[in-house]
Picture 1: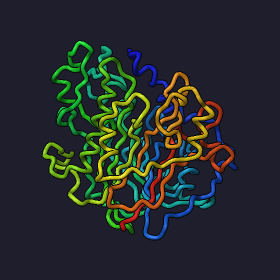
Picture 2: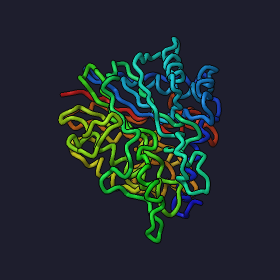
Picture 3: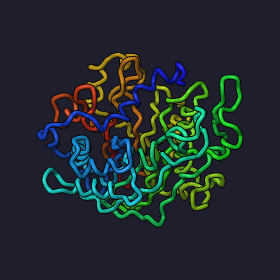
Length: 408
């Protein structure tokens, strides 16, 4: 049963469950002029929650192969931005990677500004993996809420990386199975009377990452870059114990630690190696963090600690389309404190929370940021019809965020 606190904000996330049935875009709307390429010596890193999640295993692969209109709209946006490295969130994973390979082949098709991603990475995630325990305390130990990460089948809402440059797959690190209780100072969910939401045995089995946390080394013309990636759970869809709000907070803490705490002996990855990235490693943090710096339901302490860390930088990408959407949609947007131009998600305006900034690309401070942006065209600009058609997005309820970086 949802409490009043998250119920106010939960409806905004329902679009992620239905984005796949968006209105079909017209053929002319898919022809978006490419953005200017990065300056010489720079690379473009992007994050996109593409909402390519489906209700059953294998459905996404079938949709890609038959040219589903939402898949075509997402592909058109990626072709327009043309990132060198792209983190895809909410991309259903199959063990063989057939959906990812098919999507990469679609992006590379001749015609509308093809973009080739010969290097790809995907790995298991916690969504849909049964725990065989009653994690949500609904009286049964089966169902999406009882998986280690909320999902109807293993791989739903998965993560994937597309890259123009070689990925050192043998050096990738993951924290998929990292235990929530192993995080120092973990925010264990508790009821209003102070009793733990989960019994001790369950608490000591819970995985922290709702999908996974990755550190992916990539050889680029700008040198070796390690992509630190995650997709924390939305801080809603829970009750007075605030288990999702607390998990979101601690998932962001884990992401932060991976990038910046080389000597943390508690930070043990799935292969048994302790510590975060080695000191001096050039990194870029990317992900749909499901937390806004000023608005929405998130527990913001972890996000603000991340954004204020001088070992990394926040380019604060923005768009004219985000500003125009907030002004036109009003309602919850009018009550917000944060700058509307930095929004990256178009969510329910009534009763709220309205549009939020939840998607991030955060380079290490050693990089020089050459340019940044959010692909959210204003009305009348090329690609604008792909942002919203009727009451549903033609592509995704999130926007692609990109940053151009180079080593000085």
